[in-house]
Length: 448
Figure 1 (cartoon, rainbow, N blue to C red):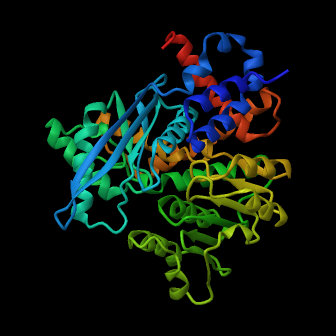
Figure 2 (figure 1 turned 135 degrees about the vertical axis):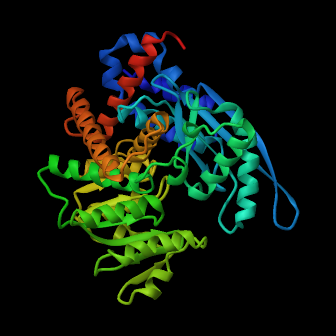
Figure 3 (figure 1 turned 60 degrees about the horizontal axis):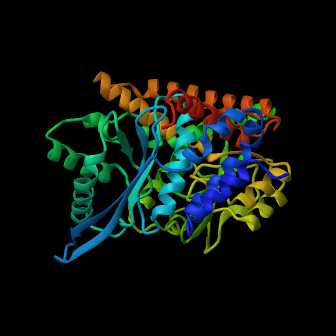
């Protein structure tokens, strides 16, 4: 007898051909829900899964802008408003050449569960463009952002949809986007976008929030297994805001970071990546060159491995913070061979389903991105609250709330996993806990 979820996976495959990332995350989530649907036939009868895997609204638009040479350029913009059962749509904007509808849907679908796990009243969405800000002048980025917001502003608002930053969208881009929104609406509507600069309504601690949250979650995961983060050796991927925040907090909590990576290869520094070395990661990211090799030139004793990934470096803990599908089966085999027992996803879906299954089947305890990566969106929701109250928060208050939220996410995922027969499986537990919260709200609101 086949699984209940297989029919929904087939529906998704028919409706979304040529979108492997979206189909991958649907299969990963739904596979955890089989025992839930066996126990809750009412969710099957109400068409809950069919409604959940289809976005409530998808918006696509043309973005035209003029480069520094006076030439008209054309990009595509997207916003997928996936689910608003728990609150206004909430999710980042991504500017990268790889952006297309399948990426947007995958990120938006993941955002539903991630946001639900925070316990905060926010729905799930994602958007962006195939525009690449790397190598562009400030003027070009500004003109693109203004054109992008000229289309998007019709569909967003504090009680409708609240975008934030993501890959390729940092403080500079958020500022340009918000400035154009303000010009178009004639409102200083601080709650319409998060990740703003502190001087005009941003939240202290937001830049490092995702990375800090990942480490807080990882610490809870290790403690649940009778281990401590202090003294552990760690390998991460990436060197942007998420990787930087992760590196900072790892050092603060006594772990030793050995390696990080970029698109050009990876850096190994057996002396430990801390202090000014961590600060230099942000310098590399802000250079616009998107390479990590200069680290090895600056810090003697470190090594650069061109064109390679860091997963062959022996460590106690691995945290991929770069991009989706960064860790494949061959990398999972390297991680298992190293004797590592802990792996926590930092980026959105950085592990292929095949690799994740291999890790767990070989005794590696895994923290899923939709749980561990939720610190950023949690702080975005805190920023929304701050803007609503018009009462600035202190950095220490933000950190305290973030640490509590990440512990609650871990505990709810662990409890859901245990209840539905998975034991201590945070991947399954996060899917179940997030799904049940959204399903309850959707049921209460009728067939919408």
